Image (tube, rainbow, N blue to C red; front, top):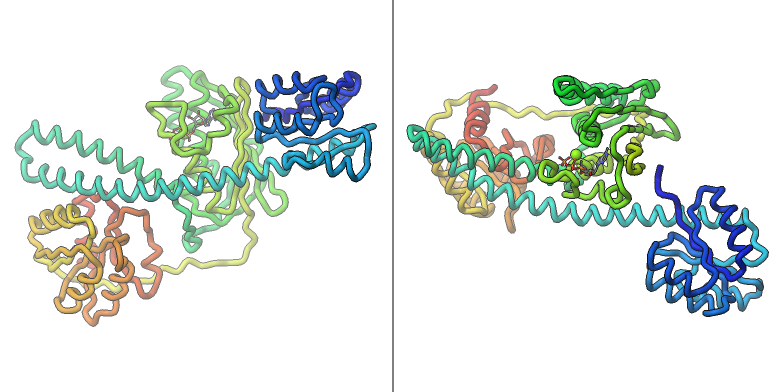
Length: 500
Ligand SMILES: Nc1ncnc2c1ncn2[C@@H]1O[C@H](COP(=O)(O)OP(=O)(O)OP(=O)(O)O)[C@@H](O)[C@H]1O
Ligand SMILES: [Mg+2]
């Protein structure tokens, strides 16, 4: 279903051109023929060929000069010279230009040529995959940074909105407007979290469990049932989900939630591509220590330009509903699991995504979650230290926690927090993670070393999960993600002090 490899044959010998064309077309290549240098130039202007076979001795231009011109027009084309003589000099002359990857002598050995073309295409594909992964890595770094900054900004907005909602709860009109701001803030937080999910590179294999791919697919199909069954039926549309191709067990070590999320995204995209109904087929194959999972839909398919960008973050053809983050997250999830994903699709002929994951062979790894000692204590009038380099965040937490009857002190850096916590007895320290100079982790380590250890809550714009808790020196009692919800914060504080 993929676009064919395109090859331009440039030779003034028309019969030779035609015979190469016939042979290679039979092998599945798309061939263009030019019998002069000028023809070749105009053809390359309209199509960027993958490979060009260029005769050295053309009547209107030297083959090697033609390569220079063609390479300028189409820098991604690889060139093979065709020469009549197989002398060393002619070979050196033939591969003089860096884009000339090889030369073939006449009469052509077609089997040799075919092997060479396959080899070139294999290398080109590997280079493309590398480029794609480099590109996505850089976008990931940017996305992670933006997501972090956004969460800080959103935390200030949502914190103040929640304060105002409490202060002016009798003013219906104002509360309505605040609700709208809150909803927009939550939407923003959702996008920001998706960006973080895409950018996430760290893998916490301690959280990995062994799961069967077939079961994960089944669960993802169930998750999406409201869309492909209930809602579709209500609109008179019918979808068929075919799982007959799922063969045997394929156990993988994974974060099951993430793998299900990957399948859910793929299913949702397939449904988006089949507004009038259609079929989604799943199949699995265990081979060479990997499970290959194919998901095929009978939807509208993709043009080449879309197919090439499908894993790019923010690339979408479904504006304004689509964020374009779905498939970039899938790509990132697969990479984190040492897996791969690729797509084959043609317009009007549906799409097939092939996912590849390493199969788990039983060598056990147990998940250890260290216990946090919980001291029951009343949670009124707590002494709370808030550490965040963003002043507006300190302000909003100060206001909220003070209103709840706690005694709050705020500091904007880790060093001061460590000193303060050493001299005063705090019941709770709420600590940001990413701060200049002294990092949140350092503050938490220092707090854990105190004789009278306060309860510790991380407030973070990143997606840290249980990781820090599992490290002996950085025990924390809860993690609150920015932008925070005050009710959630109160619940976490309550839990931390009530031993639940
Ligand atoms: N199965 C498919 N069939 C046709 N086009 C697809 C398919 N899957 C993805 N695409 C194309 O790739 C684009 C990117 O997909 P992606 O899931 O990343 O974003 P989205 O679906 O547009 O938005 P969202 O973030 O809501 O998922 C889509 O807009 C669509 O053009
Ligand atoms: Mg999508």
